[in-house]
Length: 255
Image (cartoon, rainbow, N blue to C red; front, side, top):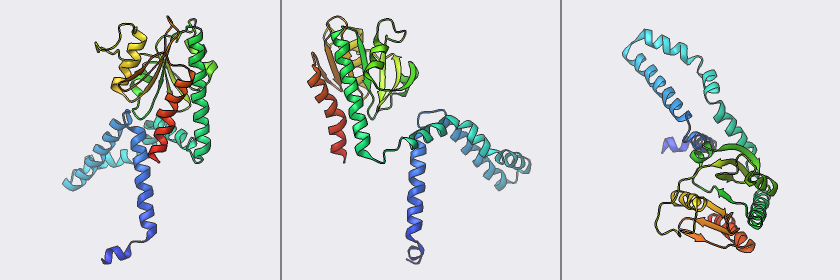
């Protein structure tokens, strides 16, 4: 009880802030090479403690010399992760209403692009990332990091474009990659009328929670897929309802 009486509210706030920072850092480096680097640094620190405890003075001196440069080494090794963290801080959503408006504009651009592609019978495979990180698929494509616009999507999927094959992956209001290859669905329950593009889109939804929009170049029809749910011959209104349900309605439920 005496220990508890010595704890100030500032100490609790301090601990919470540090916990959040550590949690966010772990989320950023999750699935990257930085994890292995962090493990290596942890082993180095453990070796330092062990050498001091056992009395291995030469090893202790060597590690102490290396440890003096650890801050510089961390900056060099974690440069991509630090840049990514700073970028995410710059994109922090302090005003939810404005963020939602931006997301709504992005979804509207996607809808307009999908309908325009369908009218021109230009095949397209559009993936919208949700909770599951699609990093592995992004790395196999051409990384872009461009704002979502109707014109950009039309230019990517134009038959003359060098990256029109494969899928584009959208994260938030950014097109992060194009020309991405997705796993094909092998289920015999899928209609034989579906070609490779449809099987690739459906295959991704079987492994992740991503939302997929597929435009057929043969018929110009739009198909949506998420989880085990597949909708064919989707029009503009249905597509808008579909995206709103999976992005805005889901967020409202979490609040």
